[in-house]
Length: 511
Image (cartoon, rainbow, N blue to C red; front, side, top):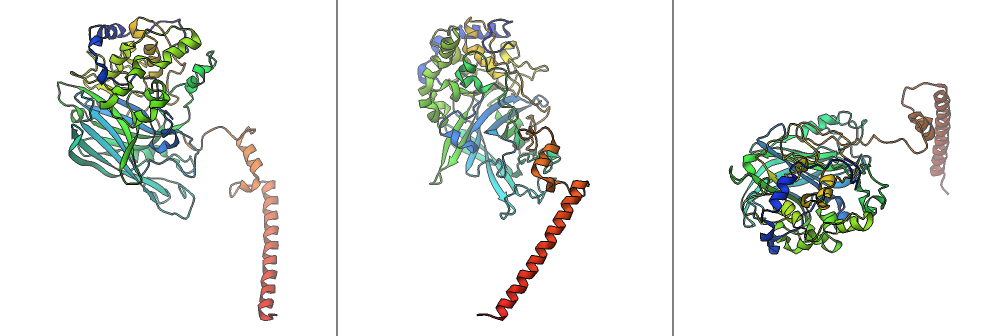
């Protein structure tokens, strides 16, 4: 893949012919504007709207849905919250909010309403409120007394019909959350802690909640006039080294399908926050990636986060007349495809016909997955555009390069404008796991560059002083230090004794 806006190179054709055929088979003319929604996607949802950017605990950054590669009779949903977690960001590390409902929605009949809802709610526990520490010693297990701040959660499965609850049941109760990775001294075997946070649920599912490496990879300098206005800012994964809080749920596919004959499910995630009156209000929403960052304008961003797919008609023009291609034309002189962009409507709002479009679909912004398509033995990062039907926009896998895919589609790949666009970042900085929960372990708080102006750990210690030498270390400097400390200590004791004697004389002979 060439860097952004390179016009050279081989175009990733894959199923472009199939997609274009689906788009020109008469379906576009029949699409009614009353039911359409935003959905042209590009990347992740980090700090995408004014209100949610100020409350990161409730900010849903990414959503993934895919047939589990090692268990193809199950479907895995991964959702992330809290963007740009600095690994060493203590002493108050990263927790899910206690006053929130973190929801994973399933539409299994294409009517733009959720039929199933998996609800995660969290509770924070503090062992010792008299210390500032997240952990008071080495943490060897999730129930270690040294882990001062812990969280547990419940999962509830809710079945709905026409937006009304018809059934609810508890899938899990008091499941421990994997903590933030404070550092190697505090958590020398973080992999063990993570494994203890993987839990089997009622109904044959598996769940995980805790910190993870941010799986999204992209050069977010796109917001600096599209990579600097002259392509000087490409090829740097600006999310490298940051963590997120992850919820991962793996369930039997039969649980979320409407029927074996209709394998397509729509998925989106939301966060609801409890207000002062005790009611929950939706403050974040995510289906396809980057909808609310580069598709919706400022005036619609907060409204989109509070909305439901069934009411997405209000955002139609943001998709049929997108701003991004016009900006690219203005800055880089690459002609924008003709509007209205019905190609984007069909692919992102309905699903691709013959691939992941449910019968009788009501267009709405969801991440649609055909659960009958088996995982690829050799996944291709461009998914459907490169002939890999198991990838984006048929669901979204962790390794799918949605930035490159969406840039190519936004610039008209499906309507004859051949291109090979990309941001120069083709994969995550850490390898994903082969087994659930699949996301990579978080970057440790003890990692990172040395202090500015230093070249080694010894230099850091010398700057801080020899008093920080470990107990039992030897050397002439230590001998001098110990001798000085002993002399200082003796002088202190002598002064304390003198002061105590003076105080006794004063109370024995008051004025």
